[in-house]
Length: 338
Picture (cartoon, rainbow, N blue to C red):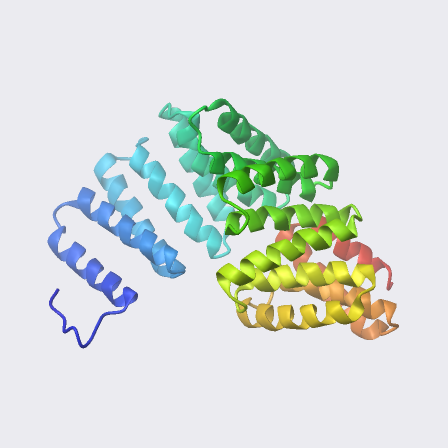
C-alpha cells in the first residue's frame, strides 16, 4: 500500500515484501510465521520459483518442529509434503521419496481418513512411477482409485485423475490392454466433467495416444495426439512445452505412417521449443534423440545414429531407470546399430 501507482510492484517484489513484513511482525509468533511462510512458499511454487519455495517450506517445517515437537502433527506432515514436492521438482528424487514417506507415515499414525492421505500418496506414487518402481506405484494407485470409487461425494475430477494415473503406470509396465481400458474410462469422465476443450481432457488424450501408438493402432493414435495438440495450442500457445511434446508425439506417429514430410515439419518445430525450454540432460530430449537416431539408422547414417542412440539410452537409463519402457525402447533401438 505504500508504493507509487506509477511504479507497480511485480509478483516477486510483492512476495519479497511479504517475507519482510511476516518476519518483522511475527518474529515472536512462530506458529503464525510458519503459516505465512508456507503461504508464500505456495505462491513461489506456483510461479515456478522452486528454490525460493523450497527454502520457505524448509523454514516453515523447522518452525513447526519447534512448536509441535518431534512427534506427529498434521501441520508438520503438510510441511513435509510441501518440501518434498519442491525437492522432487529440483531433481533430488531420493530425498523427496524419504520426505513423502515421512509425511504419509505421520498421517497414517494420526488416523487420518483415506481421502486425507490421498494427496501425499498420489505424490509418492507418481515419483515411484517415474523412477520405474511400478509394482508399488500400481498398488498405491489402485488403492487411491478404490477410495475415489467408494466415496459417493468424491469429485469426478479426482476419479479421472486416479484412472489416468493407473493407466499411465500400466502403460509403463507394457500392459497396454489394461492401460487402455482405464484411460478410456478416464476420458469419458473428463469429457462429461470438464468438456472437450479442457487441458485435463487433453492430458488423457495424450496418455491414450501413447498406448494406441505402442499397440500399433496408428490411425487412432494420430487422432488422439491431434486432439491433444489442438486443445493445448488453443489453451497454452505455440511456445509451451506441452504443445511441443504433443507435436513430437504426433510427428512420431506420422513417421510410422510413412507421412515423412508432414512428420518432419512437426518434429522440427517441436524440437526447437524443447531444446529452448528443457535443460540439457532432460529425459524428454533423450527420448527424442533416441527416436531420431532410429530414423537416421534407417537412412544409413549410422555414425550420427549411434551417437544419438547411445546418448539417449544413457540418459533414459539413468533418469527413468533401466527397466522403464523408455529405456527399454532406447536399448532396443541401440542394439540395431551394434
